[in-house]
Image (cartoon, rainbow, N blue to C red; front, side):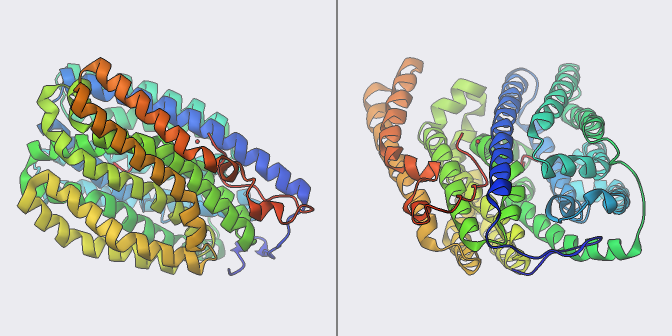
Length: 517
């Protein structure tokens, strides 16, 4: 790949063989960060899961969830570009990041401010076009998070650069407590979807304060024209690719809302959120360390290929059983957790679980391609995905409602996007063979799980005790199937033993690891 030029330190020379002490230090940092990130993500998501159950059962109906889904979609698209991609320079570039951090902060704050002003003016029009006029006020409040996030990006990325996920867990925990408390309080007071908006704002304020305290001295404004040009050259392509990536995952909300209305959208958003549980628990934990880890390995193609395949194996192994359980037990799971009034959401869930599995692999591939400088490939992949998805979603939603929209997602992602990602990774030195090896045993275990669940459910039904017994048996079958891959996941494969005198390069994620929607 091309050498990386920082605004302050010239060109960084690549090194094919990192010194063993540095490699060991990196491995320890990545391993520790991955463990903290996993704990953080699991704890936060369990809290969000419990909050969602309470709100869905006792406070909010499908229409309110639909309004929230529209506002959250717009927010996430704006967040993908609010700092123009320049914040990632703090994580990626070598040298003293504090020398160009003031310019990053200025760029980020200016761009997020302009985005919010534009959204505030356009909120009624945007809400109307998306089939949810009531969402205008929620949009204006929730997107205050854009302003807060634009400032918080700098200290947050310093924590990512240093793999300080223990500190990040404390910050996220405080965010969750505050945002959940505000949301629940306002929801039970009858604020409807607006309760989500003010809860998100309160939580983001806590995150900003926490990151500032954890990374002192990073919130200083400044301006250097030469640094700004270099940062924009680096960041704008990434911001564009990030916007495309989020548009791909969230355009369905816009299509379903405009085509089927708020109630159907509420069911769809709930199903999509359930399908995102594995993505958020595993993929989000991995992505907090994967980009920084891949960036450290980017100058050694062999180490990068080993690290990516091992990381992919870990996340897929951890994700497949969750996806299979939720796909095969969709209806009893939704009714048991959220109540019978949410039953229609279960029809879309099996297809969305397949999409969730694809998302996990594609997000890890995205981080790897960013780390090795394959920005053009990212534009091609995300652009093709979005262009193909919109018409297929429209047709699917009109023909078969929320189920058709879910099927459209899987058709485009599996039939077109996965092959394109494989080609892009292959050009970066990560062959299809490595990827197949990482996925083979988990996919076999998933097939065995599905067979066990479907066979036992038809015999024993879907009562609570029956579901527990079926799930336990299926997980046991999956565990037996993936046992042969344990050496690969620990990094004891043949590729590592072939150089006994060389210190093994660390993988970006160690085995046990916004929200896209």
